[in-house]
Length: 382
Image (tube, rainbow, N blue to C red):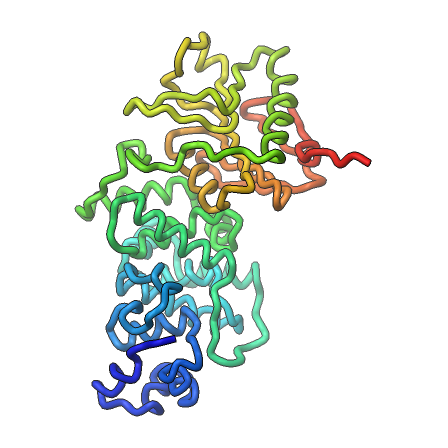
């Protein structure tokens, strides 16, 4: 990988040994990076960028780092602190939990301030993380790669920044990304600490506005006013069958009891700005929708269901679920045929993950209804 590391080092009159000492790596590592024989891990690249006070994309010429070219100094600092937290516990990776600790430890950005105001302390979060993952086997070498869910946080942070019309990625976007990875350790930590995830997300958005930061894609309900990913991707055969099976199974319970209306993916509802949104499946209780309109109800459903197709990125579907919750949907289901899981998202109480062998219940909407998760998957015929 081509880079400007040698140039920037010599401008400071540092030897390779001096730079290596500052970074906590060997001189051979620095030499290998400078001559292009060794590509640093992203956390090490972040650490180099912070030490030299230059954007990461200025030092390293690679498209792989383009995701980070808009990271602020504080966001970069969070990643470095996340790496340090992994090292403290003897783990050689950066996951959602390390990024959360990094946000708290950095403390001066919007992400850290919101967490502090919510009552999340560094000591309490570290204690919960250690309870969940324990301690590792120690550090060997200098590589601290991101886990799959850690990478997902970064990707979601970039997408949140874009959605809000920002030209940078700050600690606030990193925290929004952490909250969207609902099956990550970080979210478990926050839930164990009694944090309402939906309220925390709203506090981040409110803090952004109160700081006078321009936002082009937030309306009062917290949703995007343009380019919001609430449109429907084409269904593949499997997700299409799951869609039909879920509709049939739920309809057979709802219809005889006259509980409300179940709408398939061709039907939608209208937002206050006039946009029409069509979830895969939606349910309107009879108390809220007594008469079906000829066009679209100007009413948010009680329940929405999204099914990940072969063409969807999981992160994008998770974001779509979050948008529906921001609109005021009480319960949102994310059915993932690949993992054979159902994530049950609630407006004010986090997420519940279900797998094969477990039963889906939504007593607040369908008292007495129960569905085995295994019934959702298409059968295999001999």
